[in-house]
Image (cartoon, rainbow, N blue to C red):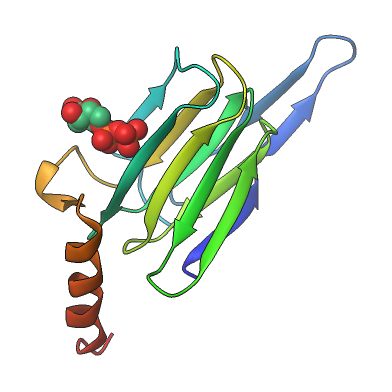
Length: 139
Ligand code: TYD
């Protein structure tokens, strides 16, 4: 499946916590054009239910715990984001759901493009049809 887990660079300090950072193109396989984050979500809430046609993203959870459920139309995988130093890089074409495991967990996303509602596929059957069209395209 077209994703990777990255270890976000982190600098621990003596009794003063840890500073984590990443830079577009150096630490991520894309230039960052947008950052957004989802917060004030109660445990048990599920969001997402969409795929992107071209958007690349890096998801991380600086506070709390969120499970990312991915499918490429054939297999399903779950990635637990419960560590501020763990990043999930998603390439385009994956269907994702996100489940909040703990109240007020924060999910942050660095994205390769500005917001574009036309980049979303929000209907699962439409997503499966979209995948069929992509198979014919030689990359
Ligand atoms: P959406 O991506 O559907 O959130 P989730 O995947 O967490 O369920 O976005 C929710 C709403 O926010 C939707 O109306 C689109 C809007 N939105 C923006 O206006 N700009 C953005 O950068 C993003 C990510 C969403």
